[in-house]
Amino acid sequence: MTPIEQPHAMHYVRCAAVFKATGQRCAAIALLGKHTCARHGALSTGPKTPEGRQRCAEARTVHGRETTTMRMERSLASARLAVLESVGFGLGLMTGTRTRGRKPDRMGDAYPELQALYQKLVIERAKHSA
Ligand SMILES: [Zn+2]
Image (tube, rainbow, N blue to C red; front, side, top):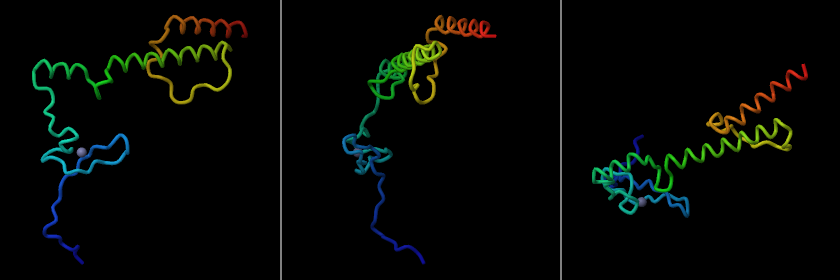
């Protein structure tokens, strides 16, 4: 059995944009060779001048408000918090539940002098108890 043919049915690529407010897909007909409709960026040609293209390449942004330096600063800040928490629990200054989830990636870069001091203290305690 063959599927019923629809001779005049046309297949269009539909816009892949998602509305932030509703979470629903746009689904308007996309421009030829594009994945979005004109309202959702299909008419954009991107940066045109060499300076603009260079700026865009250097920024490495996902969107206008997120930059590599901002991401690195945030990563280091969460690593600092994790180091402080780790040392606080290690010294018995903090009690209760620890922060859930994986440890931040850059914990080695955060407060290296504090980490070295803590390591020394742990070694001293181990010597003292043994
Ligand atoms: Zn659209």
